Image (cartoon, rainbow, N blue to C red):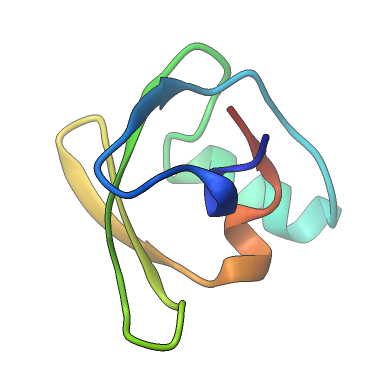
Length: 71
């Protein structure tokens, strides 16, 4: 399952990153690494951006970026 498919307000550990190497590198810089807990805090009315909480920070991700995060 990807972060984009996670139910609203659900929390899950990250199991890996896959996809575009540039997007994956950016996500790693933001703290999206294997084992970190991530929570889908909200969605905009049309499905993106997604508000994600990780390591005490709230990050807005596009759907294509969230699809690179496996949970």
